[in-house]
Image 1 (cartoon, rainbow, N blue to C red):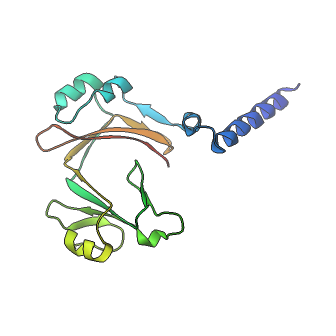
Image 2: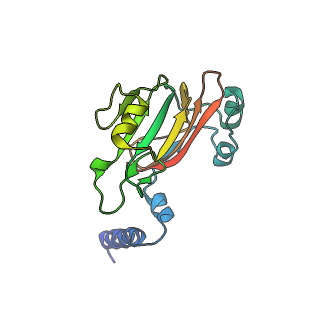
Image 3: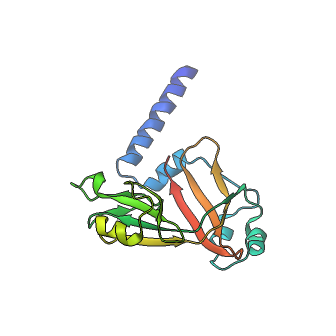
Amino acid sequence: MSQWRIILAGTLIGLGIAVGCLGGVPLTIWYLVIDSTEYAPGYSESAFQSIREGMTKAEVEQRLGKPFEVRPSTPHVMRWYGPPGSRIHDDGGISPPVGRDYSEIAIVQFDEAGLVAAGSGGYHGLSAKQVEEKLGRPLRVAGDPSVEVWHFSRTSNSGNHYRRWIGFDADGRVGKIISYYYWD
């Protein structure tokens, strides 16, 4: 068999495996096929899993090494709104239940003063109570005290990747552990 036929056959087999993965084989296999995660030198998944809220920056650095990047952050509270049965994803997104429209959902970020700082729907500057009057009770409320976020993972090609980030509060202690698979 000629070299180009071997390459073509391998490509077709690979596509068949990929399509099979999408058709019901566990998505974990699909993640491995398309994952583009790079990890900081010194990083290990077991060390990351050992990180707990309240640890100091020095304790985190001792376990994980230096991060790729340190980004400033602003403490905030996120609220997810939507009809019952809406699904909130690991990455913070939200989907309405089958048969409902995306116009019925909203993710709204509130600043420390309790006013809308960001989000969909044009609610900027409203209080949590005012937003609740318009959208109903939130499905989930989650606070993030981070003033600084250390990135221990990244992708060089903007592809799907594991996010392994640590958020530190104003006292320099772990306030949030960010760990999920990001679909780009």
